[in-house]
Every structure is written in structure tokens, then in C-alpha cells.
Length: 300
Image (tube, rainbow, N blue to C red):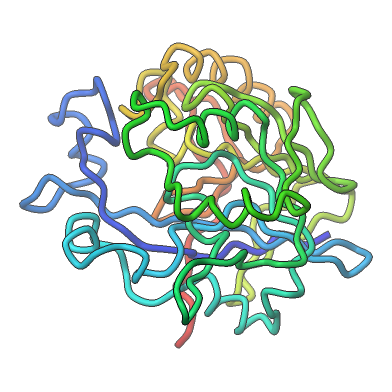
């Protein structure tokens, strides 16, 4: 089994919302903000290639830049084009060759790539042959219309999946197999139905587009937004968007020691410098990256 990281989008995020209760005097040392208090983020997706030749995606990024208005693009610094589709093309794949999509959660920057605009108006599934896996609790919240969620869930993006329920697989169990070797693990914390995604195999390969290899391991865990960057390994470093912040901390306290013991790779969905890495305990920051997997920008 092979796992290939894709820079599905690039964006800027407000530093305060990225670190919640942590004072700027602390976080700005690690991630200096621009004049608008914004810091750079990647949005990573992950291409899974199974031993039987099937392909899947873990998360899908923000989608094409023209999903947003010019004002919205300027505000969040969203990069141009549709990097996810451009990366798949470089890797020799079409959207029709994606067999499954597993989603950590349904916020716009993770699910934006599941649909595409039609020339005559409206939208269609971006991956029309893929089964899309997400926790039922997440789907229920995302499609509830509850004003308490404000603009967290992009209804226009989700509409094609609502119109094509045969492509949607809602998961009730806290641990569920997507395909052999890939599992959704409910975490809660960031949202009620947020999940991490585990990829496990004796012959697991971690290889980026440039041929760079990640740490040797038999398991990798995409934490999603309960640990979006290496700076969020500390218990109280978390996103202000977490709807259940104590659950995020509890997940890290329970899970990160296990990853250290297992020498598993933790994958970061928003870190602009690292796709992931193995972990080690750290006296100052609680945990730190041990063997890292640095981000390499794709060749034009």
C-alpha cells in the first residue's frame, strides 16, 4: 500500500483562530503572522494506492478557487486553480479512477473538493465512481441547517452527495473499515463527528510526488483538525473552531503516547512545512516530531 501526500490547497488562516487560548506572544515565535495577523497553511489530501490497484483520497482540500468570491479568496489567501486535480493529473489519474474518499469532517477546507461546477450551472460529484465515507454524526450536523454552525459547512458543495446517496457511506461505528488497511476512527473534539483516518500495512510506503520518502512505519494516522500541525502537539494548542475543546485535548493525551510507542507516523493536514513524522516525548512541548517528513513543493 502506498500513501502519497498532495498539497490540495494553500491558504492563510487567522493566527488567533489557529491557536485559540494560546497568547500571540507564544505562538508567533513558531509561526510569525503577516500584517493581517494571518499565518500560512497548507491543506493536505492523501492519495491511497491499494495493493490491488484501487485508489482513494483522504480529505479533498478546499476545491477550486473559483468556488469562492474574489473577496473571500483575498480574505483567506486561497491559492489559484484546483491543485488537487492538478496533482492527480501529474500522478496519471483521472477523477473517475478514484474508488473511495474518506473524510475527517465536512468543513469547507476539507470537503471542498468533493464536487465540481457544471458549465450550465449547478454542481456534480467530482469523483463520480467513489464511495464517500464520513461519520453519520458529522453528516447530520453538516446538513442540519442549524444556524449555530454558521458557515462551517458548505451546503452547495455537499449538495451533489445529497442528490447521489448511492455515493455516500455514513458510518455509525466509532471504528469502521473503509477498505482493508484504512479505518475511520471517531475522535470528536473538533466537531461532534470528527474522525481520524488510520492507514496500516506491513508494506506501507510513504512517498511524495518528488520521490521523497516519509519515515519507515507500518501505520500512519491522519489526525485531521484535532492536531492540524506539529505546533498543535501540545495539549492546549488547538483550533478556536473546536466545538468540544476538552475532547480534543483528551484525544491527544490518549493517542499521542500510543503513536510514540508504536513508532507510527502522525500526518498533519495543515502544516506548511511537514507532511508528518514520527513522534517523541519532549520536556518543553510535551511531544515533538522525531523523524519528520518535510513538505516538498510539486514541480510545475
